Length: 217
Image 1 (cartoon, rainbow, N blue to C red):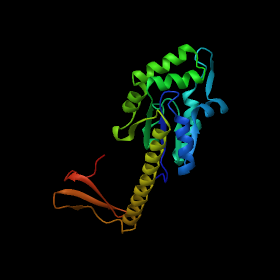
Image 2 (cartoon, rainbow, N blue to C red):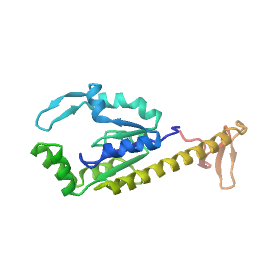
Image 3 (cartoon, one colour):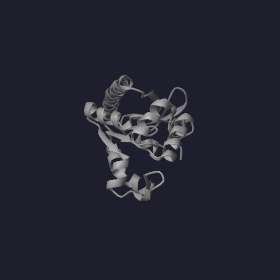
Image 4 (cartoon, rainbow, N blue to C red):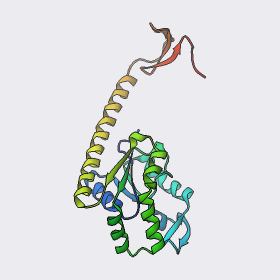
């Protein structure tokens, strides 16, 4: 059981992912994993795309590189996509959004080529990354936040930081409950509960097999 959550901060380039991730890492102690940096430094790519000025990501290599960190927990994954990562690795997916005027100004300042700029604007207008997140993860895991200015960014960081604190409290409570139940006496024969369910004690944790059905294969 992880003691710290894994969070994906995703969204169209220019919405403020890295700013959010760096601030959250400072305030929560979680590790900021920049996927772009990992792809470049660890060679998780198949070359450079000149037209779109980006690496052609080798997804298998990337997952192999990130997996140990993700399984340990405590990661803030910073990337423009999210559907690559298994749901079992992730506890929260934050999709940052910005209006098209703000996004255009930010991408123009980065000197994005016209084709790449238009592709990202279209992606934001069509809510491509938001839909990708909703299709890939449980609805309760996905949060959409506006990121047009510094006030909104600060509010977002406050909200996510509060979520991290609550997640850790909840996990600690679950561990205490599990340890307490596991400390009971195990073993013994199965018995029939009042509702006809067949029960068995496993290390202090009752396991139900259903009314008079016995053990499920």
